Image (cartoon, rainbow, N blue to C red; front, side, top):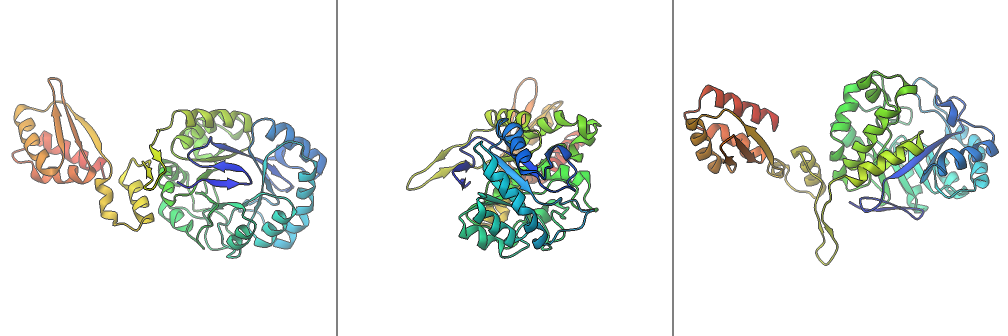
Length: 379
């Protein structure tokens, strides 16, 4: 996993999770507490509510990306950029300033005017965006989107999200964003839940990950909470997201989100990372799907993915004959049956466990059913 230097702010596995607070200079944005058109009032908000509360990055939006609203042109966004640049001049606190846009012209003007990084909500649908970011040596968050400047984030299936992030490649300082939220009419809460469940897969790109999950519908629906009561579900998901590999969390609730992110960081899995002539990095892989993403990245055969993780199942109620048959077949399948007086543990890779069923002879109906359950669970 590479580390991205965003104007001196290090983002990656070896650093604390970074908090991205939000400022909007777009009157149509739905979250009104973050919306300003007066630079001095906006700067005061940034200092008091964002930087002082723990924001490492301030993301400034020039327009709402709501799919129900008309898309502003690059010229329209540039008209609003003066307000954003005036805010930078008035802020007293220290943070990395990110411009949220979809147009390379706006990104270029913002970076030239003092912004530090870009939040591209259309994921390089403008093919000139990576060139601009590279010329300014700027970090850029790339949100998964179709190759269409009018439809940011309008990707539903997780595999399509993954593929969309490859649009027009990556810069050395790209941060990937899998685009949580209702960006398209076809996207469902189940789509977002699956994306969250498979968040570790996005580490397969080797780039830091940004998540924007603050009070999102797919979380609120679980607890049955309206937006104004949804902070607890956001904080729970924030800790989980960081534990699963997120490096930047975009939020309107800066102070609380910072604390939740630090908890996720403190208790995440610790992996070996040793630089040297031959560097060693233990990857965060818990499923064959996650392994497959990393295999793709290094140009290896995906078939190895099923042998890349180990699963452990406890079997209770095994009779003596079933235990003997299973133990004999486990060795031939490449699995292990570890039995004791009170039960047995079946250990193996998904591939080994899939081979096991065909190798067990004279199994009872109960054992056959149990092995079918194991095989389904490892697919």
